[in-house]
Length: 107
Ligand SMILES: [Zn+2]
Image 1 (cartoon, rainbow, N blue to C red):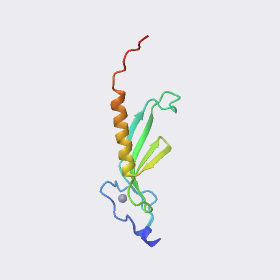
Image 2: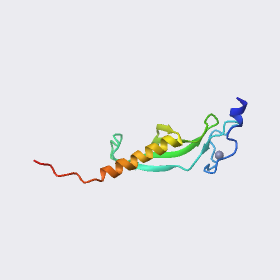
Image 3: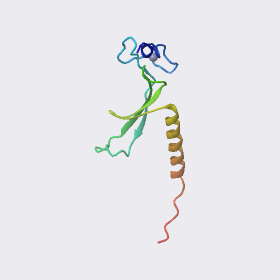
Image 4: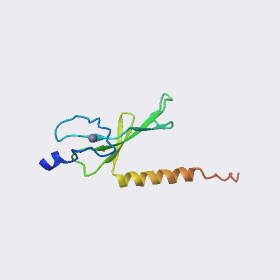
């Protein structure tokens, strides 16, 4: 418990120092928020784009920073750096495949 309270007392270089719920031993480090427009998400009932928010979070209970994904106010995932790298590569791969030209239909 004491070790957990002493973990991550110093801000990592990416922390914007806007600590949430600042209490001794409970510091939560946050990075800058990044947003990606999601124009085709099923929750876009009124035609307004949803935003996928991404940021780095480090809590005393974490071994390392996690990448937090949230769709507007809905938490989606907390990924380790390795998981986020795999997701990023898959997204880049899928975007590249989607750019391939579709052959005309035989009909
Ligand atoms: Zn910090």
